[in-house]
Image (cartoon, rainbow, N blue to C red):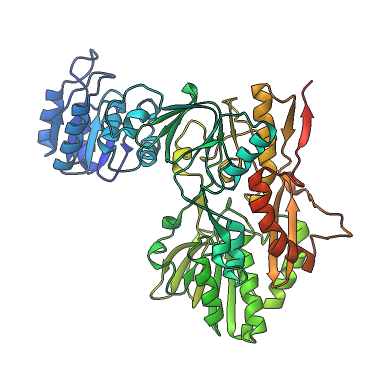
Length: 557
């Protein structure tokens, strides 16, 4: 007997036997739903037998027999209604549990996100991709029609999505391209560190999506519910179906604020802030200006995260302000990092450590934020110990800059495109999906082992554009991505350590060392970050102008 928990109220399982009822009672179940018709197999117990054994244990029962593959809308409604009526937790079963989990999935359609339904089913061990259109259609059987068809469909209108669309059109203006994204606002996220340091104005980091999508690209303003790669289709919320010849996935990543207990309700007040959100970065600067003493904590969650240097960038700029204000000596600064090193590329560690010592920062490795109480100004960290069990460290704070745990978007995690960790599974050089040859991915949502930065997406966009056109037969060459990423580490106001590197930690500087040595803090790097990179982002990267972003060419034999 195998219990597959779906929610606190429902568990599904394969066929149970009368002799299992004492164990089912012991496991705490108070009701059973049978979704298997009597007589499917010769050795199958009848529902009456299960019902009689359940009565002895004081367990309620309900019989909703479903023939394999024949679940009606009415069946799903009955299941959902009965699930609410019966005392929980409830155990539902059929031959394998598939009919029971399908009934639950359809009964929940329209009540919660499609991705959440698919995730709970997947976590219980069941794949609901066969009924995803029906789930997206509110649980009802949809008409099997295609609402739109495009030569190239791009999922995501962030930096990667708009950049790759522009790169494609820069090579061939006749392409039929659609971008799917429900957002109306596009953010220059690398600028939020500067907002939190009092250098940029927040309004300089935001534009409308409509103003950035290239001419002749169709904008489908909707959220993706699921992918059907075997059918070359994307399912949108509401069960609209978009078909493609080539699919490019660049949906960013998920900032999981809810993963830290108590965080969401205290963000933006009680001294709790984060530069990882547009509306919170100004609060960071407000806190920094107002703090004259006390304890300031800067956190970093487990990798991977968007821009691995961002957590400490906020810290250095804050410390620089307190130093110039002559109050740093009164501020107890802590960098609580879930990882084991300050930065993953060894060449950049020495200059960073010089600033750690200059500012008197306490480095606490293996410290992962798990809970926070804003009003009480208390935080709890899980500390990893090599030779003993993890321990919980409680500490107070006057200010805390929080970086949330991050993962692939839910609708990608539960899709056939994902690897075992939920990221789109691509070849790290071509960015082509390892299983589906007409699918590519770039940006933060895919699993190539590179830094998740806007600079990486700027280099990836022309690689994907070139390779898609090669597949279509328009280009004779393919591009290769070398893992390039850039992280301008703002160690003080006016100086930056410019980290540029590729796969395996190989240094990939954009300039000769005599012009700019990225391993040393420099004013030139600061000017690049403050004055040059924003216009490069808005006027070059998002416009398909590939200055210093030409990919390595791989000519097919």
